[in-house]
Image (cartoon, rainbow, N blue to C red; front, top):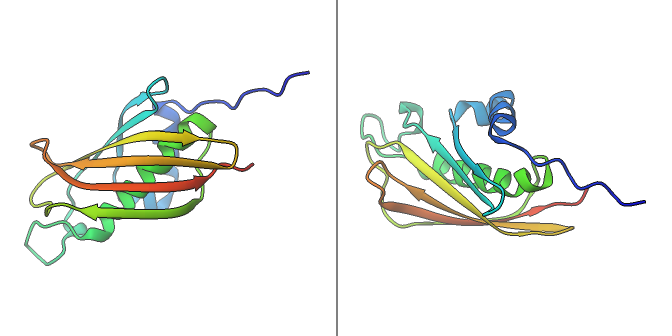
Length: 142
């Protein structure tokens, strides 16, 4: 008897999970592409005034940027495993400020193993300029 492989998550599945989580829903994330073969998840994030570093500056605070990177990395690995996953470790490098722009997060799965998954996430502005990069590891244990 073989062990069944996990059910992979599609774009609609991930979007529904995003919308069912009060915190993730507050980020207003929009799943744009799921590519299981390449292990890539692409998600758009709109700029919201609640994300501003300072009132009326149009500059994103680093906290929402980190939350977007962590969430998209999580579900890039999770789309292969079939569920959201707890974060083990996370880091982000901010390369330049995000000002008056929506964002595009592109996560690439580096490993989706039996106990640990790893994803790299690139965060771009509306002009396609790389603003931040993140890497996170997630527990894939049942």
